Amino acid sequence: MPISPSKTRILLTIDKELLAWVDAQAKAEYRDRNNWIIAQILKIKEVSPMKNLISIYTEWRKVSEEMLADGYKGSLDCGETRVREDFSSFAELPEVITFEEMFKLEKQYK
Image (cartoon, rainbow, N blue to C red; front, side):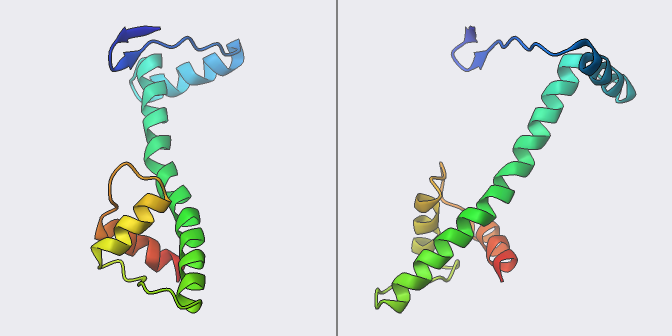
């Protein structure tokens, strides 16, 4: 249910045992239930993209290496803006990946 143009209210249904566990976790961190749940969601959101990006990077890298082997011109150098733009497009990122982020992916790949 929308509560503003950029916010939506959600209804969460969980069993009593899980609710008791959530309440215990929240109490241990001196948070209320809703605040604790939101903090957990934000932690997941922070971690997941990078884990997923390495698999996307691996796929992009293999496709790019095959294209280069077939004679297409290009580069895999993440220092080049056009390479970062190409990867960002392939990964459907909302913005062009930074050199630092892509360099981390490159190091994980090797």
